[in-house]
Image (cartoon, rainbow, N blue to C red; front, side, top):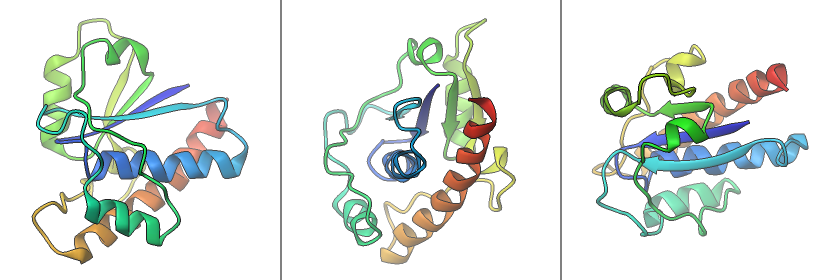
Length: 154
């Protein structure tokens, strides 16, 4: 199974989602069965590391995001990934607009798909430290639900 997490710039929310889920899969012994990646709908941060505030908040909870680099979603992603999970409604709309007809990927809003409130992961980029912690709280809960979904599919 291949899963792609998507936000706007791919330096805060989506790499955090990838890092949290990667750890969940490793702990569950499923890392070899699920490929993960993250990307942004915008190209602003291609090749750049994860935002330092994001890395620090993640590191405090035991997640290593140091090797992740920003990249932009490409059309091939809709054929490579079975599940593409957007962090907010704007990114979902952008993904739906670029999704080729008959592409096999399921494209959905990550938190809504797993019954979580709020339905969107707020962008912490212009806020303070508490925003990065809130993102982690939401993405940890979502990862637990996604892990249960993966177990049901494998």
